[in-house]
Image (cartoon, rainbow, N blue to C red; front, side, top):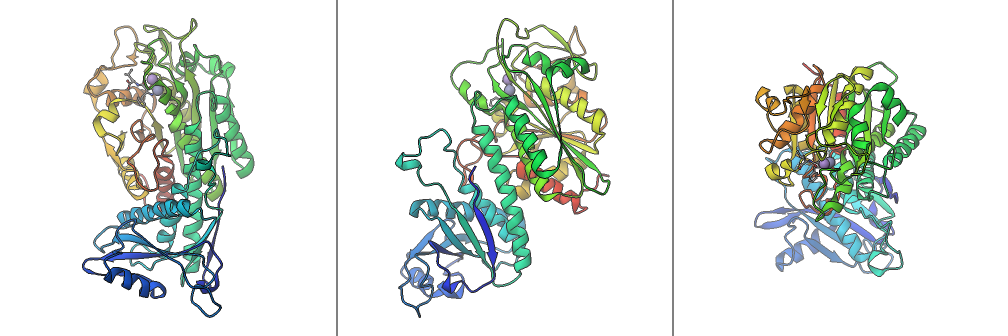
Length: 513
Ligand code: BES
Ligand code: MN
Ligand code: ZN
């Protein structure tokens, strides 16, 4: 993945040599837009002519005259980018998303003119503060500047814009806060882009071994503890779920674990992500139309691992453990059959009625093992678990199911702040009843009604009393609500929600009741 250089300055921008000097302008009803005095004159002229209102994403380009005494003479181009109306009654989370959108629009503008390096002048807003403004802008810009061209020949014209090389943030004051926001936004966006990269990879480009290699490399760079449970050890430990799903595969399964602990002993959050690197359905084979999309069935694992990249860089003051059960789900003569009965790590037995309900089987072992081994204060799993969540919520909300109101609330808040909204669904004994089996403790499907919830009901057998939340991202990990900073395809969802959850937690806002 390319890395863009990001810097912050409080020097006067007039003399900066740059491909593009960018200012942001706020739309005001029936009046000229609000903007920096440096661009007031052209903005006012354009507004009076009816050419520019500073609507969201609207762009006013101009070319400053050259000459040593002229303002902005060293900038090749100037762009005034519309933010739309930002009313003070809007809450901080909404303003941040408008800023992310602006960042995404800016990335689009840079692509059009093939800008290599730009200078972005930060707008002065009342809410949120300068740190949040800078963070949201850089997030949108880097997420919007994302491209996955690994498998394309670089000589092709439409692919040879490699994206931004350098971004300079210019602010007039609060340089320390701005720098902090810029750094955090960069780290979070790069992590989300890493998750997109993983999800982009096809089943032959990203296997359980790639999860392990990525985690190992992260551990080395950031001093995290890496562990990988291989097939033999799974057998010894009795991880019947992941072993059963892997039975038809030619690639060994891996349970990849990364642990971060702060120096001072603290609470621990456990993250578990579904790492099905390709889901054919197994013997309960999926229809071939659209099956190729099932390469993104590891997006939960990708989110968890990518979040650890940022955790490793930021070193928060709570512990975070990530577990990714990873395998593909394939049919073969040795594959698990409908009707087979398996025994999970915690001794719970399950009747496998449909081999395509494989995500819950691998998550079950990971949850039970993770809780037993790391005794976390809370656990969140994330998975492209059910088609039903797409029927229910479409591509605009991820499903949330939890046994703990405080944790659910914290996650909802984190999702809102990250621009990755969650919608909570219920779970009670009636749904649990749907997965009762005649021959085993539980069965792995609960029929069509409430499919997202009965999948979570299965998982609830493996978390005991630990505060637990489950995120179903089947509808949002791919083709999430289209925005300027969210392209079609893998969205990298979950990464920034987790990082927000961790950040809020370390700020003492989310102590469990
Ligand atoms: N990976 C799928 C869920 C999925 C579907 C993700 C569509 C993204 C888009 C999961 O393993 C699956 O196959 N679920 C089944 C469960 C069913 C057999 C109970 C489903 O949703 O159809
Ligand atoms: Mn499946
Ligand atoms: Zn699946």
